[in-house]
Length: 147
View (tube, rainbow, N blue to C red):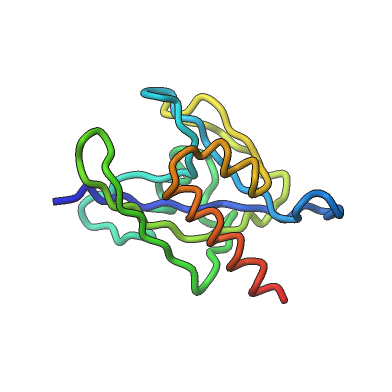
């Protein structure tokens, strides 16, 4: 059976979008262990939790952002299936916007750094094609729903 995890693709909109920089920036966290990969906050579902509760709890634990500081975007849910540490894994992501552009990020011991990045830079750091696809689809969803 696949391991199951849930997370939020957290974003903010730049206050003053410029022609050469996209208006949307994604939050990525760098893992403290393994290959020090970059992903949005995510984690394993605990007994009695639903998937979205897991995503919100993990975001609070890993980035210090409480549920009340976020707006979960309706209509976007993406499931990634891949192999991690030789085991099948399923990760479900939702999009969530921070209500305060300058929200304070407080990392747990699981992560050593964070960055707010435009789509291209986020995809370069994300490394894994499944994560890149999730960021691209999230960006596409936000851009198409804004018009």
